[in-house]
Image (cartoon, rainbow, N blue to C red; front, side):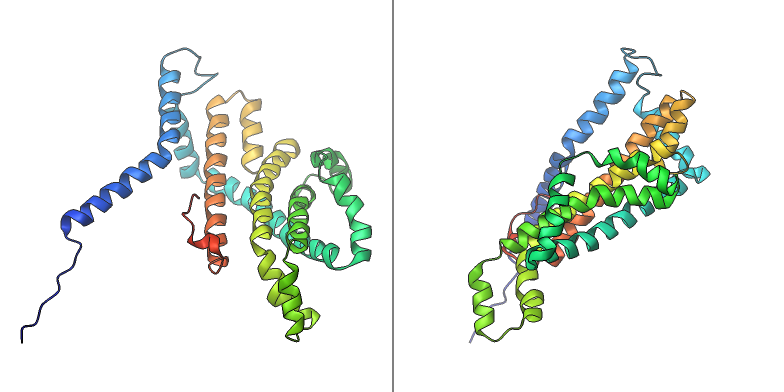
Length: 277
């Protein structure tokens, strides 16, 4: 009796081919960013604009490196992230709780629905002068205006998600003897989680945006405050450095949130779909 030894089906050429395809696809996904950065450097060096109007990308990167070495970048980034994440976490918890209450309780819906209906479409930054009058210009005020702005998408997404849970799931759970608490935690929230996560994905970059705007208007340390300080001294390179820093931080936050979403929704059909984030 002869024994056939099975060899791996994937040889070195196949592995190299897959690696090459992965690298090509990875580059294709960032090609537009690379092209934009290259165009920036070329345009700045073509003297179409003055260095004050458009500093070269290389000069901006040198400024970022200098700020990193001096420690200013770490301090400003940490403060901005602290304010943005604090506001986001308060908005996430508060928004989900209020949204659940509005979806499950008629009195809560009667009370909060007019507030959400009026507050959602209006520019919440209009409350900034009131927040400054009440709370000053320190972290409490900045985090408060972030919460005021970021909580509405979470509330709206939670309400829509819970109201959109299939009635058949609820009926089936009740027929199997589930009480209200089990129904909420084991049926309604898991079914509504994908849309709730969508609301959180909207609130996260919004928290960063409002944090930077609040720092610009209120002053103090932080990426927004550093950009305004550089603008007052006509330091164009530092202003563009701040734009790059905020763009990178926002990109990392969005990607991190997408990873968290896939982890939390590993059971959901969308987890098996091709990832675009």
